Length: 513
Image (cartoon, rainbow, N blue to C red):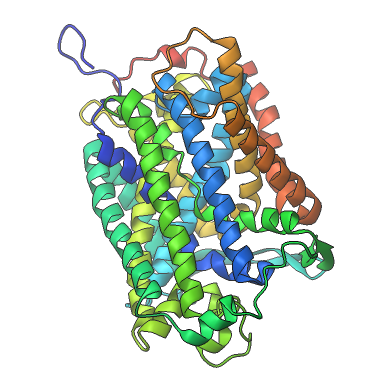
């Protein structure tokens, strides 16, 4: 947008449908699909329930994307989900989401992906290692409640997290030079990782199929046990409870939903999407649909190549199976089974591509939320300014990168991310409930796209997500109550911030700067 004098103001709408879809897909696909399958296998202990877990994730994510499409088309503004919560439920709820996003969700995920990038870079460059310390500041002893480790942090800089730090900074710089450049990088890496995922699925379903694994997973002796009770390790004490299949599938959603998360990131960039009423809902549908289909096919491919359970002390990837893959690296184990001797290198290359694209998409998108919060007077004033030349929220990118770097150095992001999925689900519930609130509060508002299946599908999502939260509070309290605590900590911060009038009037700031 330009003024009468020809001066550009505000964010520029330069992202087309392909770029928007690439942000959806690229932000979703990190390293989760290659790792979480091991934990899902250990909990479900059957191929049928293993696939059902991914089916539940696909159903919930698609319903969520369809609902967000209506909100995105109705309010195509920078900040996305933050704006929806603010408009539907009030500014405090928008702030709590932005607070949690900045503190843990977005920055913690970027930190995890970038440090993971550094670790897998070590496959090709052995000097890059989490054991090679350049500056070891402190060791924080493991905190335990019973036999469960709640925290173990090595604070400092090693060559692996140094590579991650450099990637964090590099991506912030790339995205500061204009949304077109950030989108171009995203398009290239999302296309590359998409082809890699397709290749992995095809290989696993064709040339990689192993008769013994298929018999073990799908043979006459294999049973999903839909009606029987299943053992589940619960709570901080590690006790075993016998639970129904609906409880079991709720628990494993922590892994599968996390690996499919960040699909909402494109809504953060809504202020820069061309024809947003059309492209935002369509990109949500195309991006989530394609990634979820690939996830299901890859999960099926895993079952075609490796036995689900196996032996924790097995000497080969085939003997160890999916549940006991070394360091939970199921993707690596599958490629090793298909291409002995070179599978580790192939998987490392795929994760480097995947991680780079994921971190770039989340870097580009996350900064727009803090920019929107600043415009509302709920974040540092300078974060609400744009670069004069490139029309990008440079300070928002810098603040996001700075906190991410601190998380990388502190080594705390893994612990934070253990707690975050519960909080993420709470905000999804609130946002979809907000869709229903806005239908009542603003019936006359323009809605270029309406969520199909309303109100049934939104109610199904809310019911499923609420059930998962209840189950996690009951059976995994060590990961849920801390996450809830992070969210609730934002309430006094919100009132302190608004009381001091720190950024009062920031919403009317000129966007040049």
